[in-house]
Image (cartoon, rainbow, N blue to C red):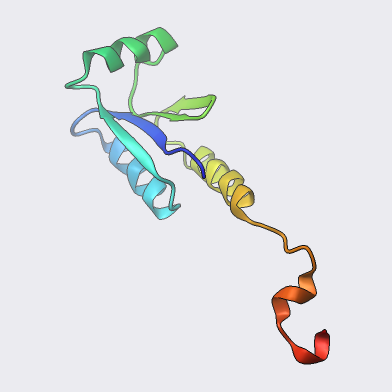
Length: 99
């Protein structure tokens, strides 16, 4: 199973709201980190070189700002990971005439 994304946000941030809405629409689980109350998270963001919110961390990848194309790419990659190809496609049909 895929780990949830981490989204670093600030209160009142429009791009943060747009990002979390897009993640929800793409059915991507995420964990919110409020930079207004988490000083350690602020230090991590500065160390990574980010100065704007939201910051989304998806495994080894990360980005700042509302990036719908990146959200779509993560959703597509994770959907591919979840799909399991049957050993014999005919097994999935469960049709007496196909057996």
